[in-house]
Image 1 (cartoon, rainbow, N blue to C red):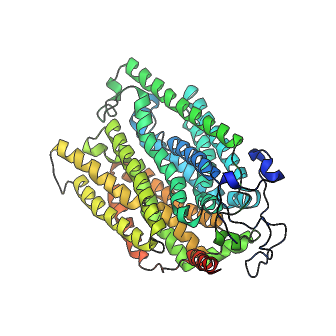
Image 2: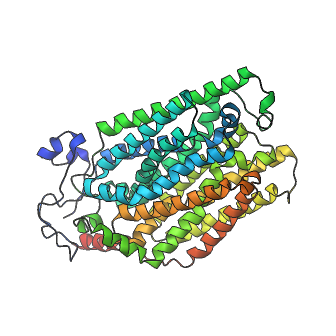
Image 3: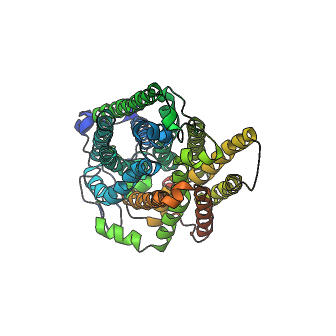
Length: 497
């Protein structure tokens, strides 16, 4: 018989009395029947379905770590004007910083998730946060010594390990700790915490600078006073110290309390599918031979990754419109915050309207396409408006386009888990993450080409074209939800019993 209970009524045993730092639970004392995917002894007391209130604490810690990682990732692009003035870095060099994170994430994702699958979520989170601490420490060294961008690039390679863990394991955390009715929402919190942190970076950097850098200051940096330049350098130092303090806070929280898994699984489908770890290589082969999964990875890269890259370069993208660093930062921040909220709303809708993920994604992408089309016409001067009216419209269109294209990210992970079932969620999330970051990296590579660096009109048009391609590809995705079907079928059986 299945029963849901909260912590207050959980039967305690010796393992549950152990410190939560050292959780290492086994869900069954016997090996399950792999062929039938069902454990042979359902009468075992451990074979209960239970919910634990501590899942909200884990979601909070995971989310805060994601926010810290997003803040670190997006520290530098919003300060591009300040970095050009203070350290004589170029736009191309600044774009390489998040690019280092992107390519590292794509490289380390598969081996890292293999270790997480064997050793648990706690191991992955510790590797993640220590890598982030190293990266932030190298950023502090860079800013306070030679200002060599190579030190910073090495640090951001470490940050790529953190990106890999946090993006790949979001579905794994949700399926390990949350029931079906909360699973998509939990995945949304995990994935969109990174976006929230990226949005925070648009504001914290320019705010901590304590000095306003306009679009006109960059080409006229030779005429600026030394006091003005020194103030910019001091503001940059404050920003990197803020990043380090935030990351150290997350380190303390993860070390203190982040178990790998609960004593009992949170849902019936998870209980019935609680088999030993599937062969990792076979799981990879199964996903790579799945045409539907390839299409989903393309959709994720074309819609979500391209829009994320486009937004992170807003400071350079909107400079031809005479929109300064601070204003571009507020546009980026508002867009990310709205996308985060939109993602949570869409995910809650998906949790209530099961088996409608594809339809929700199509509506969302279509909304984004309409807005980015108008925005591209404004940037190309096909639509000419007074400056004040133009900047308001740019705000609105950027926010709407970001909501439409970025809010589907959690649904990409959940739909990927349905398409790839019964492959484990961590591996599915890993391959979706690799696809997303490869598209991010490709976007930055295009931007590093001198011809495209000097003329940024291509950014919005490229994002528009990729979004249209993603919308068309969605028509080829089949509406098939085996995990939800399993939950519903066993739920029906339980009621009848």
